Length: 317
Ligand SMILES: [Fe+2]
Image: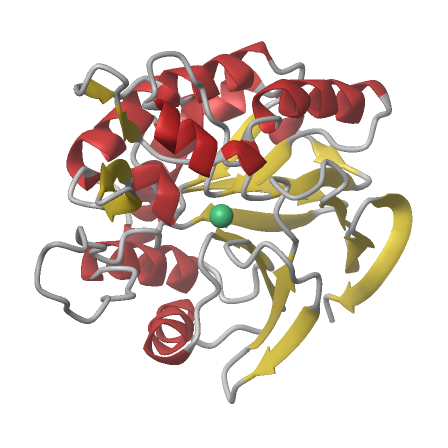
């Protein structure tokens, strides 16, 4: 008979087993762990995509070539033991095709980058990763009703999603165990513009929040690093802090989505201290990524595009 604590740990361990096996460093106690935060590459795999859509999205055409090169460089220069990419991995899950059909092989194209990368790549999903683009009256037509097959494709194709589109893993540094959590908040019910307008619903969803609340209650003193695509504000931030509960160590929240911010913002509540770290979109510049280093007594948030330069040091105590 398992105790409650053993049961909670067993469930978590199962969800990260594949990644732990892939990276021997994951379970070892190390002096420090450095990784790269990168977001919004918006990779496009063009074969078969409607030419009008390729024209409208041409600003993102280069990342399919540069991302593998930069992952190679990160590994070669020893800048991080893994990459954490917080969403809008691809421009969309599916496109209207040149022949009037659907091109839905973008997840496979991204998975080839991950599978050929010389270091582990962990991801979260963004709003574009569960979206379709069509053309309507010569304008872009966005539609998130493909969320079901999109999530299924991500789970099939990427090792980090093998247990679902949100998950957690551990790294131990000088006896301190960090929990790294990938969350999913990219779906907000975007409907095609020819349907009646309605409010977007920005939420993590009850199932994900219940899971987060459960794993966070396991150890309130564990420092957390969260990867989240859309920066939570308003009700979504309340949902998040409610699930995190009372915490004695700081929580760092790595976010994307906005493409042009590189601030670190401290959010204090009666129960916790949260640092929101915005990294600008890789889709705008291949220098848009930063190094994060976890140590036994502090977290160093590196400056964007300047490995070795620290933008902010967050003490654990
Ligand atoms: Fe984006």
